[in-house]
Image (cartoon, rainbow, N blue to C red; front, top):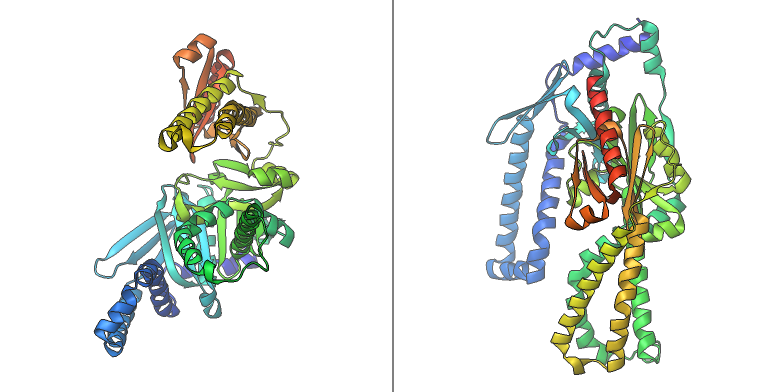
Length: 510
């Protein structure tokens, strides 16, 4: 047996005994809990003035004593939680025992592990401690976290679960194959550059998320401007025309949002590196909080190539790799996604071919029926007309000039036709061997690529209009949600559905 394999045996055996969190985890748990509580409740208290009112009523000394008492209780609770938290690796099963007042035990089999993540905030780096998280096929609801362990132990746990997950049942291999597996070094598939990181911040959807987060500040800012603007002498640097002043204000707001989006991209994806080795893709990134995520290719279900409208103009996009249980939304799911940012179009194709061997994304996409354009046009036309009638009811016919009303009425069909054309042109599909590509979108586009064998369910839908026109709609159920191919020719859709079902049945029989 090789020397490298001999060194790996004690590491695996050491995990069979009960392991505890790092002693630094006591303070880290206290800091993490305190930061979480402050983040949740401080804006409410500070915004309503309740914090200052409480200090004035109770007194500064009493408030400090109360805070110190709470801190002491939290420290004792963290110490008790640390003493009752332990874990070990029993064969191919990870066993975790924890609980503050209620003792609980969790068991995770290596074959059920689909996602391992390692997080290291800035305050953990000096101590060499990380947050280790494992997720099973059930998704985020089944994730289990080790809040503070040494990096070496985290790497040993990941290697232990990975080795047992990928080991064959007979587990009888030669020394040469073991040495080859151990010596194989990870290959860097992608490393982001500063320019690509800036472009990702500008072309991602972060700018819309930031705008939504800052929207509650619009009303206080409006009151501040109303109260203080008349007392300020702004004639020297404001444009003389009100239209120019409003345009300059909108431009400044857009620049501010773009700057914040770029800063958010630097915060999340600084130093992004994607490595491949032993059937896994491992990414590491983060400016202050370093994050590592491992994606097992055998668990990969769907790959999405996403381009926003501005990203299409600049030739930039990003890849999202989906596994089972990855259809949740919100900020937590956003941070858990295995995402490759700042890719050019050719880089996206190369990485997709690496993840899905044999898929080159070169076959042209087939369009859906032109009837889909008419349906979208009619729906938008009806919706815009109803909105215009509602506006007339609120303002009255004399609320706007006749010329403006006429312009709005004349623009309704143009807007509906333009949106319908963009929607129809963005929708398409193509089959490349054992893979299927489906593209959806409007100005931005999202292309889903997956093997035919990863289809979970398929349904064929006819409406009364579709039956008359000889078209159908296909609904495909995948691990990350559903996809829709609207208004396909009936013969073509039924042939595609039969091919998909035949591929799934052949894979299950094999």
